Image (cartoon, rainbow, N blue to C red):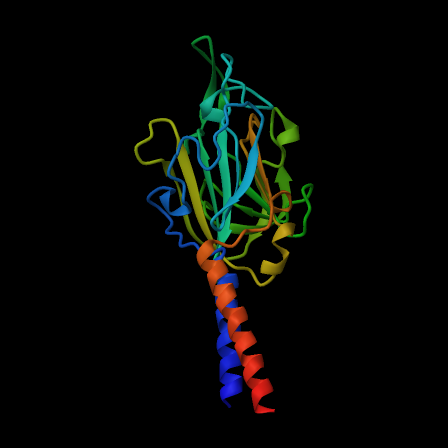
Length: 270
């Protein structure tokens, strides 16, 4: 009986260690500090390069970031328009009950029009919907999160998408047809606290039945505007495996030691 108890403790410690590497607590609303983002302008990665996204993993959060609109003409790639058409960061994480998606961006919820030499032109363009794929595809996103309108915050199974109006290479943009899954359970799209021209999206989605932590490398997240001036693609397949923190490594060591001690005791009793 004691042998089984020791083995059970060892296995439990190792399971805790495995789970702790990606542990993070997200409260939807109030900014992005709970994502570990302390520099709201630069995020996790600082880059002044236009059209040069940086991907990474930080304490349970997968991210892709790009600090665009750095030339005098407001290029954000593949289009123009400056911060009102810029997506600076796209983020993903999950816990035992929910998955979370966030973005830091310059596009206001009410949309924006282009400005050239002080002259406003074109119609109002808006942020598109967040597209998600869970089968590794980057050409067909089977799920999406509405970012505006009466269905704002709803997580849908998507049949068809709308292409980006001016830069179709940034597609997909908006959910055209789809059905609500009922899994969306929290959503904000508002100005970042203390910032004058940056906004953030934060969303919480109940884990769907097909979500598999062992297949995170098949998840892709995409976001652009209705015009397609800027696009962010978070592809977990591009990112390295999480590296355990020192506390996690210690728990692993304790688990291995407990298993070793259990084996020694068994040998003595035989």
